[in-house]
Length: 400
Image (cartoon, rainbow, N blue to C red; front, side, top):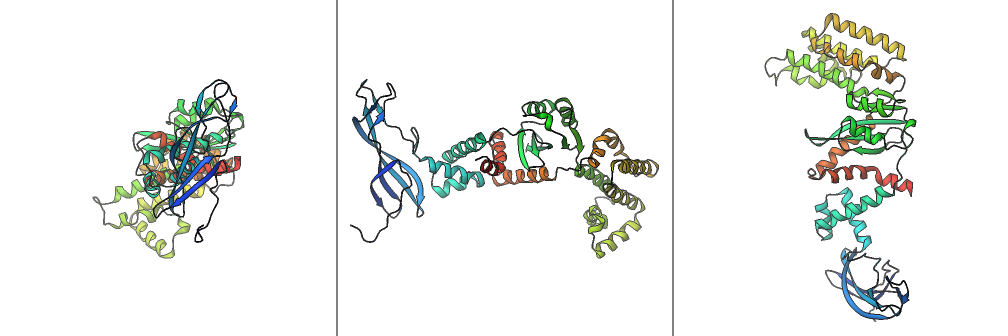
């Protein structure tokens, strides 16, 4: 008997260890199933009669940073009732699988957080196996989750699957901070198809979105009781773009080295976040460009407008802001007026339901990280699956 070794449990109670060999590069464990009989798949009678045996080599999880191979003594039984010969079941690995189920689950979990190629190289397995493990693990996680009920506060936003070509729509529960679903596409009929699958859609009270007409039409058609709120940060983005257009119109030539180009981010920064040095520099620039000063003042006034205490005050102040633009401009700000007129009710709904898509924008940033880590996805289905798995682990843990 060896006196320089230790024994640890294999962790597979269905198997009996017959022998083991450890070399410098791997660990081989000879095993067989503990069962003394098996049920015939034909007549369902159990039989202890062993017809023959064969040896199968199967890969298991690493131990001590060495790959473990199960040398399985697989038996074929002969039914004493009907005479049928059949192979005993293999629950540890599965039918015609050369890897253990627990290894495949480990590969799937690791590849959800890491590139497939990295996991394959680390575990010394094929990339095809790792991709299959990811798909199996995703089905297990996502299939276990109950279909979510319609959220009370819902957020909608589109994101790029293939930039400029393919767009999908992310839908989140803004109260529970969870992804409710992904819609393939961003057209009205595609979003409506998702809304029609919701459980208790009448519970949706508020839907926050950017100013995209197909989204609004889909909500009005399927969720007529819900109030649409135009996302605050998308509206401010349009105001910032108007300010930037004024700046570039005053910039001589390309102006890559001019003071207006160097001050572009300074002008977009909130006034209360400016340092004394930045404030002094900005005021000096604005004094030299009166039209730019006018545009910057309008931008800050609109930001301050969002601090209105109620809807009535907000509506009054918005009307005054629009009138000042009609009288004095600048022109890029006049281009905002049709948008404010078309989406006026949804913009003002913010003061009754002060919700934004900030959480959803964070999810969109994570989606971009997922895409960059994998250097892009050729298969849009795999990409959507990865996105759903970003929060499936937490939801799966709650459900179980």
